[in-house]
Length: 633
Image 1 (spheres, rainbow, N blue to C red):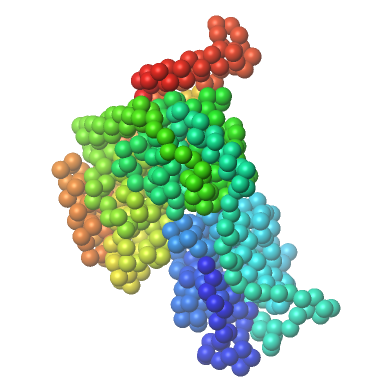
Image 2 (image 1 turned 90 degrees about the vertical axis):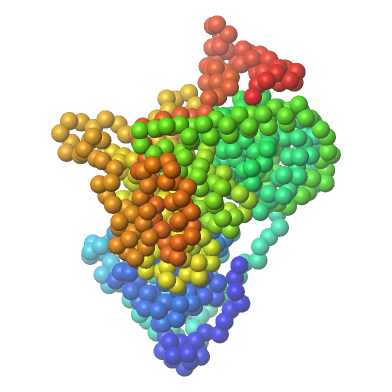
């Protein structure tokens, strides 16, 4: 990922030692040596010298100012997702540092490499309590892999290198704190090592490794998969780049394939055996696939919807993951395989013989067909206001194959998971594990800056738009004239939701009551907050705000307008915001779980057949029925 180290030059283009250069310039040089294309941040006193150094560097790396540090953190996480390299964000001490936390936790929970560079008060001012926060306590959890404060100039190249190297190798956020008075110091001529003989080596670059499981483990996994009669494959974001191998293995085993929410873009969703997303936001076909399988292969997934997995004891399981700490964390695993998904699947393919089980595959494909018909029917159902399912479904046939999609948290997550069909090649991401509202537009900006010649789509609700999207549209307005392809399409589902935030999906066990996305607890009387009846669609003119910023704005409130609006936005010569006035009363129902009564039973219960033996007996009955071709799907 790293570019060759370039000769160090000062602000005037002079070689090392020919111009007085500061530690802030040195920080920028190390980022450039690692091939970092841009730094996301919000200017502040503690990092003003780094911002000035970035400007002196002439855009290499470029500085991308956000309206607030939280957006900068999400942009850095988004860069790691869409560009594939390390994301870098910048913030000053105090409130600036606090605002970065959401984006850094997003990177930590979804395994993305991000480096945060934090400014700090001058050493002499430490202890004065002015904008002072214990940064090591604040970032100690989220940046646990690497968190250092630079104290002398000689440390800086090494610390920058280690922050990036650690972030990439551990797929996690790291943090470097640099005091303001250190940034202003002149780089020592030749950058000598510290007194006392200590040697601090600094060198950018981290060659990728090839990680493949041991031969005996691959053989055992191949044997287990080959013995399965009803194989299900669950694909997560770790399956990126392995679509061909997954499809080959699925065809060889006549398996059905489901994905996690984060793994939705890995495979072409038009495949006849692709059941869609698994879990509360997913499809009935995926729930049925898991209910009927006797063998499970998990590829690069840590999907939290464990209530939709096969019952423990129902299926034998193989799991592939590059991170050994995630193995068997969601389901009992018989053969764990630590390795890169693509390399591991290639090794498995040579060991798994082709065999046919058309009865199982036919049942899966029939379930997929029924699920798609049901989705179409729900999208076309008449509603009081515009049906939000229809808005996402109408994008599916119009979505360019080279595009990127950013999805926010809230009801839009449901409609994206079930009604937007992604063709192979589309990059799509969301704040999947942290589930923080307001992430989609920063993601989309990062995606567009990484791929300025390709269209980008951001899908969010009115709550997320109010949470930060209105401000970050200014960032879009600032940059879009520079893009070869100016299309960045922002969809705002305006359902006039109470408070506007839209909530987030609940991820509790399947036995717990399900709270719909967007639902909020009742407010006490006299809270002073508006009720749903007091908020009406259109009170905030989202499309008008986009037009005010020099972009295109479209407002739709009737079904016949939806397709034309997407076509108009995709053909526009500038970014477009589509404000869809949708019905807030559409239920967010989880898919029905076949044989759900077998889950959540007491381990020691014996009355009325509720004990462990009863669970095993019913599971065995389920397996026998499936083996006999019963229509479980």
